[in-house]
Image (cartoon, rainbow, N blue to C red; front, side, top):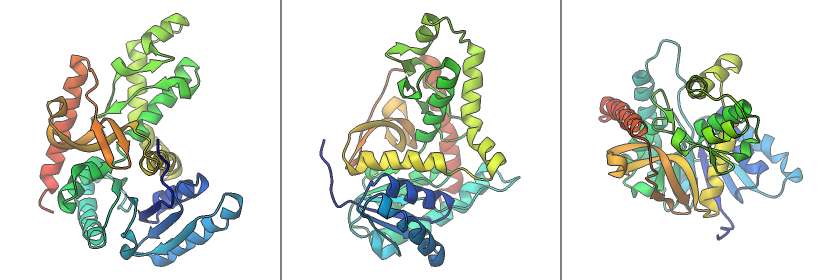
Length: 317
């Protein structure tokens, strides 16, 4: 694995999510140059100053507030800007607002783009990833959505609590949409090399279909629960994005459940959605077609239909 030195990252949007991602990247020293770009330049400047004052305890980094001209020569451009969903708004209402904003952002990036991957964090992530792939004209492997990488982490956390095991030993994926039609792939969920049902049985832990359904539902509703309790989610996604950034910037060839354009995999085409994917310095290296149970493949295709329906509603924006 090669280590890429002198990596440059731009973050579009210095709100709670963008600022926390910037802090995570600085704390973990993911890059040597980091630029925050926001329509509110004062907000971006304030976040830069705040993070900069912690750098003497962390290490050197050139971090500054900039503009879209600073997207030039980036290794990674992270898009976090978006309008939060309001009570009573439909998924399509949110999609229309944020797709319109994403179109403006994409145009501004591409006027200055020279190289690098674009990582979409803004919601609805799958739809915006698809549209940016279309608008940017970049090879599809260069536009990736953070998608269900965080959902999968939430899933693993819940499983580790249920089975009383170190979360680092829990391996499993949430696939499909980063949203309502997402689902856990139980056939590919393992602990210490054992399929999860076999692991639970070996320890005499009751692990029923009802338990699985509860974990799947809790995973799906985790974000909404956090928003209800504290108003927003940003810490978990920041760590998730920082991990993805490392995979890109250090060319780690990591397998992650991220969003990219499918071109026939699993029998699905023309849809950006989340499946296990090898990612590295060139973005998507390969979309993996892991073996799925018949009902899991059906769930994946239903999720694709849900995303395609939403894309249809915003494709002309």
